[in-house]
Image (cartoon, rainbow, N blue to C red; front, side, top):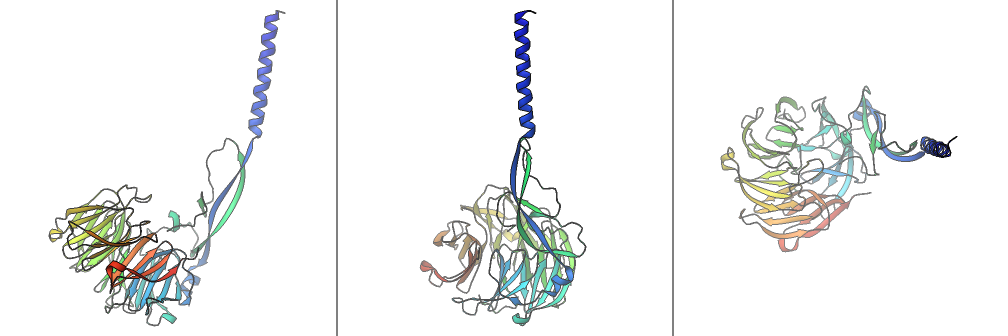
Length: 423
């Protein structure tokens, strides 16, 4: 046999053996992946509704929307319920009760009736005695597009309701060339990290809500917004709300704010102004468009104040305050823009404008001249979310708790109290 040919054959065989060995190693290569996931805890609808009452106070863990009326503060615990806080002494607020309402995100109060969402349902509660809250009425399925936490949509589980999520971990063994992570069960929410599932006095019988609210009350109507719709409830008999209308607005609706007979509705692409002279059938009176961004809004007689912020959900890049001249509402006109860090909720008390600027804290401006806002003071010890400023006290919801500040002496805003979040 030709010596050169023999060498070539031997070399070919050696290479084939080596490739076969590599293939065998590759085929047997395994690696472990550890995933964090959240598994829902269910109760029946009957059990959940029976537990909507004044239960013992619990620690604040994930604060959301805020509402105040008289001596009480109602603070949403995201997707869990409502903390009832006795605020007769703002320097020493007392967390006194917790109302278990799974899926709760929003609150509004008129007189002795509190309105709240329970996932897709509206609940009306008698709070005349906060120590013994009672259900007056539940309207089923009035918020049909409401998702569960993290965008999770409940599957076919009969009359069961998600009341909590339990954090778990699982370790799986997979081939080395298997990429990414997945979980093929429809009843769990997967997470790549260990973060939890998402996200003062008044003589008026209608309380005050923050600018991040999706519920608001004006006269004898409760107005709520979903991501697409404006819903109207007649609450002239506060204990017996009647759903009277659903008005499609568009997409990515976020917040609602009342002023006189107008509703200012913030969306990720602009601000809508609705005339509610006909309380059950509000109509669009004006609109102001802006770049895609999250968009809370408050207003006074002449101007609307709109904060735009960047964020994963909003997919925008603007972080600023826009001041919009209302011009009889039909022809809104941008009058000024001020840069911000990451603004969220805001509140106005006379010429004072309070802005929760995310990690940059609470900022207070003199807004007497909207073309030349003057920063009076800032408190940057917390990542702020929403604020209600009235009667010289600012209630501030922050990542680490509920703060109350006295602004009776503006150059020296003073911390009155803090109820801390329990991690």
